Each structure stands twice: as C-alpha cells, then as structure tokens.
Length: 137
Image (cartoon, rainbow, N blue to C red):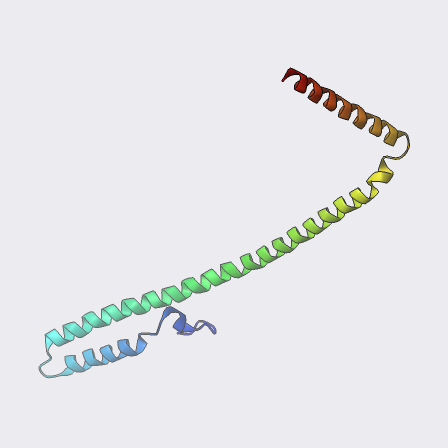
C-alpha cells in the first residue's frame, strides 16, 4: 500500500511479509493429513496480532499525513503573520521617527507659543506643589 509518494517506513516497518508468511504456514498446516491444531491456533493468534500492528501502522501513517496537511497551511499563515507584524513595527517606527523630526516645526507660530506657555505653567505648578510638599514634611 503506497500513499502517493509517502514514505511508509514513517509508521515503522511493514508487517506484510510476516503476515503473508503466517498465512502460508496456516494454509500448509491446515492442509496436512493430520494438522496440529495447537500450531494452527498459535499461527492464527500471531497472524491476528500482526494484522492489528499493521492496521495501527497504517493508521499512524494516515494520521501523520493529515497532520502535515493541517500543519503546512498553518505554517504559511504564521510566516505571513510574522511578516505583517514586522512591517507594522517598521511602519510604526518610521511614523514615530517622522513625528519626532517634525515636532519642532509643528509647535511654531501662535499654536507653538500657546503650547510653550501651557507647558511652562504646568511645570511651574509642579514645582510649586513639590515646594509645598517639602514645606509640609
């Protein structure tokens, strides 16, 4: 059983040779004139166990294939998201840099004078308040 180019050894080695051999042994023992029922029963038990192991192996391969089919698109989405975040960080950094460079020009004129005055008033009130705090303590 080959699943379109998949490496079947991922789930472990195939038990098909062992299963085939046990089936031949069961057929041979059963066809004897005096078949040994204990031996045939033992072969059947072994066959059943190996068939279960083979089924689990194939299920494991199918599960791994399903995981890969889910993981690959998620991996691509994560890479795209990471690139988007990097671009947004770069854009934000550029915006801040532009703002800082143009800030002195933005406070020129009447608005700049008003802004400067308000900052001075605020600074003076903070200095006054800190002086009062020192006087109280």
